[in-house]
Length: 78
Image: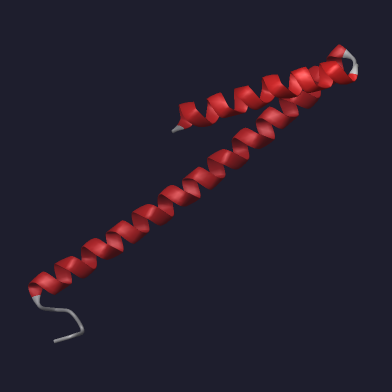
């Protein structure tokens, strides 16, 4: 998953380099702005991915516990 996030970040980095070059910015500003976009996007995608993975894992554990309670006869429906 980290490789995918890094590759998306690099793709956006190079797109932003192309965008800033077309606008005629200086080389230093192009690199700094593109690097800032890359870092912000990569961190945001990592945080979102971690949140989604934790939510999926919590939901899966809850379902497993419900099924195990149903099999043992300790559910609230008895």
